[in-house]
Each structure stands twice: as C-alpha cells, then as structure tokens.
Amino acid sequence: MITKKQVVGALRKCFDPEIKANLVEIGLIYGIEIDNDNNVDLKVTMTSPMCPFTYMILAQIQEKVESIRDIGKVRLNLVWDPIWNPGMMDRKLQFKITKI
Image: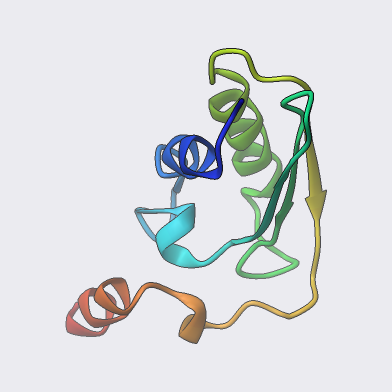
C-alpha cells in the first residue's frame, strides 16, 4: 500500500523554478488521497493563476509521483481555493526568503 509519506517524499523532489524550493515547503499541495488500488488524487495550486511554469510544475509532479513503486493512477486537480499566499509556506522558508 502506498503511503502519504511516500507521496510527500516524491513531492519534495519537485521544485518551483522561481522560488527554488520544493512544492511541499512552498505550500502548494492542498490534499493527498490514496485509494485501496494505490491510485493517488492530488489537490495542488500555484502561487498565482498567471504562473508561467504551471504546466512544467504539473508535469514534474506527475513524473515524480508516478515513479513510486506500485503506484496506480495519479490524478492532479489544480485548485484555486483557497488562494495561495506566502503565509502557507513552511516557516523556515518564510524566514529564508525574507532574509534575501
């Protein structure tokens, strides 16, 4: 059985090219659901609806999560509610960005 920990591990290998941090730290992953057949449904967002890297990031997510052994189907659901804001980032990342 695939675990959320495995999925999160794969997602930590996905990076936003502008922020240079992984999607989990940025707070772009809103939900992970895994069924009994190891199919994974992900709710993800972007920092902005105008993000020029949306399709690249979604492809990266698909590739990394599909690389998990025994994974079923991976379905991505791009959502905009709630709208992402910097307060959703990991606190350590918030601190690092404000220091730049």
